[in-house]
Amino acid sequence: MFVKVEIGDIVRMRKKHPCGGFDWKVVRLGTDIGIVCLNCQRRVLLPRGQFNKRLKTIIKHADAEE
Ligand SMILES: [Zn+2]
Image (cartoon, rainbow, N blue to C red):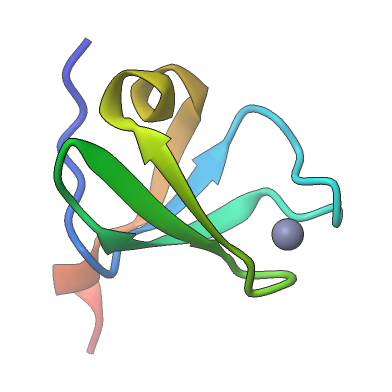
């Protein structure tokens, strides 16, 4: 499964972060995807394959912002 994400996108993961948050902002793209938890601001790097597996949905695309 190929998921296209861009920096600034808000994504929802299948699994809850220990802090209780589900939503993350994409801050880095590459072999690893960097995401920041919107609830606790913690930054995490995930290999793309793992990111794709954990991703539930893209809530908001960066280019959709006003
Ligand atoms: Zn968190």
